[in-house]
Amino acid sequence: MSDTNQPHAADDTTGMTDDEKRRDQLLRLSGSTEEDAAPRITVEETDEGVTRIDIADTAAVRPGDPDNKE
Image 1 (cartoon, rainbow, N blue to C red):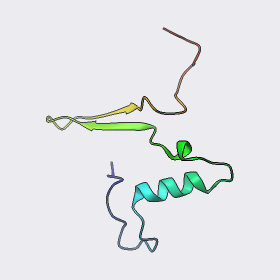
Image 2: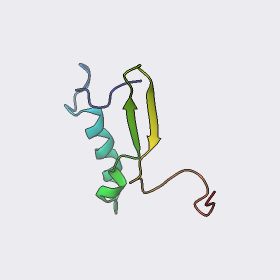
Image 3: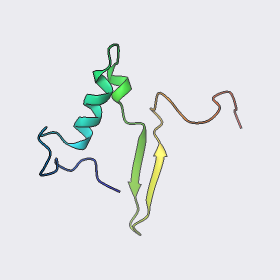
Image 4: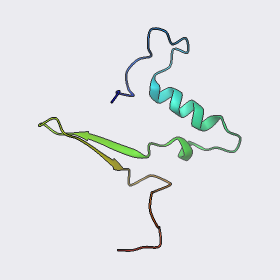
């Protein structure tokens, strides 16, 4: 898994990080807002080297049935 905060690759001519490219792509569409570009996941790495990926509490869109309260 790549770290999206890393600087651009040597062959990348944009000069943008992966996070900046993601934001740029998500805001390119007419009518898009900053909320559209907000992170939808959180990544946490434990001391044991385990990586946990969760849906962010602030994500505008979440997987699953929104009406199911179980």
